[in-house]
Length: 322
Image (cartoon, rainbow, N blue to C red; front, side):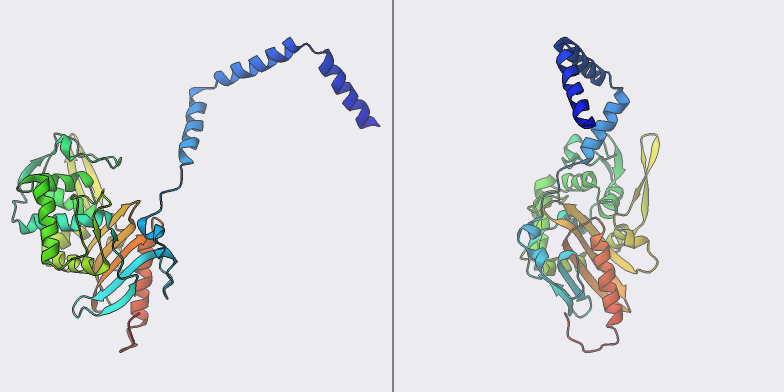
């Protein structure tokens, strides 16, 4: 009975209150919303920007490669591990897949650069044409001067797209000649499933297979400068009045538990997270290829799983490869 009386009183009050009063109340609420402090609006905008749409699926995901089971439960859709000295396949998962390889492309850009016997001490000037549309901030702005060696170092260690573009543009004959040389070198190495479209790897048309990438790693490994630059931990580069520190995109290079001779990471949406690496594990020189991994650190985790598996199976001599 008490609740019924309260409800009737509410209805009566609503009937008595003029509509103009309600309108003024609504107008006041609207005015208050407009008077939100700029900082509050900025916080709201920042929260909205964080709720981005999910990343587009990679080509490997669209093809269903991630549904392939493997005994190591890898997050990479594609994997290949080979003994560098005997070419024996130690582990494989979807070995025949041909997928975008993202910035692993830069390994071929670096290879044609050193094999063209270009002066690594030559001063190169960054031009507007070297800026790429990857939306990743770069300190290599037009007008900046750096040596070809520094550009090579940045492209391999930090996967700097503007540096790779600079290497391609300053290749004899320019960018078209550089891409042609990359494809010619691939054919010469027997990389018949491989095609290159630009020196950075930003285009999904840069494609390869695991077996082809093993050949690329082996070819690049023959050059000490590529081994040094790809595995170094940092480079201090003067940029204007500042000195900018660049680090390695592969955190395993800083780990004392790993003996890495050469490496390159890569990522674009179409390729997923990628990694190629030469390392010594339990006295065995191996080449590791991981493609289309989901998750920022999953390729690193996969490399750790493969290493642990190789260490655990060292004593199992003669056991069949997986």
